Length: 342
Image (cartoon, rainbow, N blue to C red):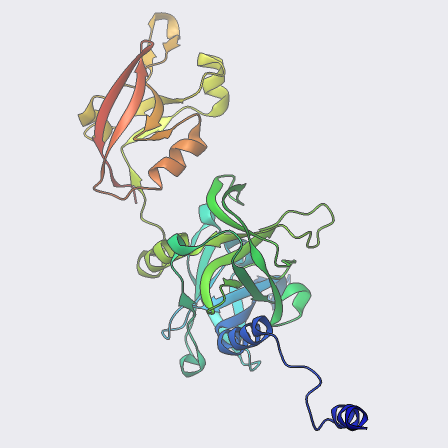
């Protein structure tokens, strides 16, 4: 009789049929705390008709997250690409006009700013990239297929993935997750179990166009470095040394498929010139011979421009690196002090 009475009480709702699991409670807590930081981004192109009327043509939609209380919103470059007007929709469905502050296509990062509604903004909190581990929980919040504030969960499937970005340059150190990422999730936050930002959902690996359990996020380490530069300068401050290089086709014609980057010209008075780097040699009759071939930067091997770009991306203007070159078939290290190439 007691068992029957207990069963009736459960059925009537007097006693909870089951308690939430700790993991469920954690997910609910994260969502309640972080949802206000997630926004819906609409990309619009304003054009003029033959009758001089302005027309707003939607270019696409995506997700984003609040960076600070000054109105800055972070999203993917490919979300805002091609647009000249933008709308940011907050969790309470407030729509705010936004303008583009700056972009970094090589890391697929963009920053917008809204001029109003700052009192409603809740900035996201950032995690430390160095503390991330394969297997830890991930929570993605975004607007897949226009379904705002959709939640998916998973784990970090791998760290340090290399994925070709929209600019054609490889984005390294990407986070791979099995949290479902679909079209419209782009630009939204990937969070840890404390609700801290660990990455920005950027792309999926899928033959069908839908989630296949392989999603990639730009790591928080890139976001934390690049976003402040976009806010301050409108672009990323990158180091360089004052050279031009041969294209892939030109390099193949000159030295075949040997690894390395062939220096074309060295800018007079630049760091490369001061270090003694040499460009192409002009021979009689219009022929050319290769000068220096860059095969490494410090500990990073260089096989092509992609490697060279990503090697320099690890440094900042003012750093001195050891450029490893081949000259006349012999290895030669050259110290070069990098400069701002803005």
